[in-house]
Image (cartoon, rainbow, N blue to C red):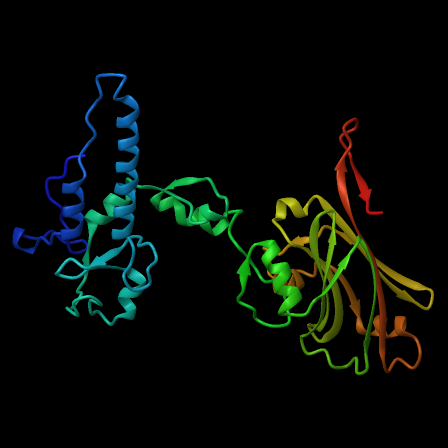
Length: 331
């Protein structure tokens, strides 16, 4: 690529030569990186290829550093702004620094660095979750969109009793739930839980319980809580899978609650913890019990809630002959 001169011009305006602003770091970078010379002998082929690979890596890394906002340290995307001295920053941070360059304190004005925006178009960078296993490489302007959906991105803590900001992989989150949130851990694919509440009228968005089950080599979160659904207080139980949505579809579960010769049964597919607890709850994707029905199941004078919820988890297996899914029940 031949570089005559780098122009960072004010947005949407044509400027005179006196108003052209150079980006010194960018110029120095390109002047220090030269094109590789073509090889003429096989003996030098491997060494030249290795040198070219190293030069390419250094080239990409150096330009990527230029594209890092000095304020938030995130990658910059158009519009990229700069001051009269050539210091750049992202559009989000421009509004935060009150139109003053954070490096030299000069007034920023409304100058865009079109050269740096153009350079970014030529870059291909690895996903930022490469260290977690993602092998993908993307054009600079496509990378951000991928990273918001990358299957290797960390999971958020599934605990619903507080706004926990912890993120990590599944083994880390399992240990975090056990050690920090003191969540009950169980092995096996069946469960039988009894929920008791002395004052069933208190249901102001109160999360009751989270239990983690380990079966089929995977982890599942069983939620049970009380909240207001419109004007009516309800109780809800649902299961979330500690993994991605595609994996979650390999499993099914059932929930059953009853008493006094009556029962309700729910069957469904666990939702991935990629979906927030609130999103699952507000979609009503689970076993929902109206309070009057819950008190009926509780028996007695209906002044105390006593619910027994049973359930099981199974894995759907593909039948190689008929193509139908058959359940693989946990022993």
